[in-house]
Length: 299
Image 1 (cartoon, rainbow, N blue to C red):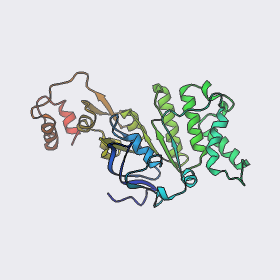
Image 2 (cartoon, rainbow, N blue to C red):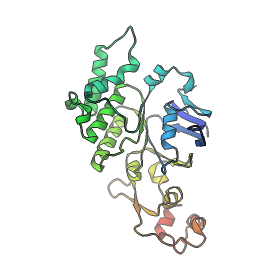
Image 3 (cartoon, rainbow, N blue to C red):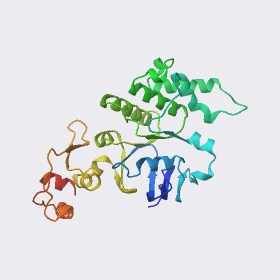
Image 4 (cartoon, rainbow, N blue to C red):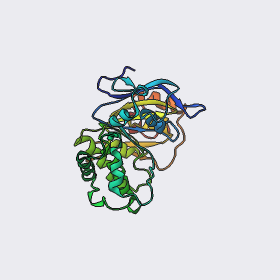
């Protein structure tokens, strides 16, 4: 796969792990500029490992991560932090830390011994607080906020870093559905209104379909497929990658795909998944397959 000219960040034949067996193997992926790209896949498939590698928190054993045409390892750490921001899973703040102080930490990559806190830093922090609807929370402690408020404060800190590239590792973890939607609506605004390129990891396939321009599906440390949600989410893919029998319907309001798990497992079709795949390719069905519509949607 040739790196895209419209991608500032990408992985090229990357293999990376944690000291033993590689988690990600020979993976090539471009993060398209100006879009929201969501990485999905089963637990343990390498989604977060890939995101951490793109952010230079993990070093590949082979291949490279490319940032603005250069190997990211050749770019000074402070300069990487000026171009790319990462919000990790379940970040932790010191007890009693105020929201405004947390968000101010996003300005650290822009500080120098000869250039300390300035009015421009103050402006960026205020703008980040207002963009994330946390301005009214600025004098409250992080540990006194609800889950959704806390996550918006962390995103405000990431925004204060003032980078064009933003990576979010499972930003909706441990949030109820209303707060998940709240956070992802904010991500969409950052992309649409502020022009941020966003790559994130999500587990909820329906939220990924709703808020993504591009979906990347991983399994066993490799990219299985990628594309717009309407093209990616099919019954065959859900079965092959997630082991999930489901229909994929069109949302009547948005036209986006909605994954509907089937309530009861059925006996596998004669010939197994390969028979189902061949039937879908030919426009037919197999006895025992989820449905005629499910098979046809997989073509």
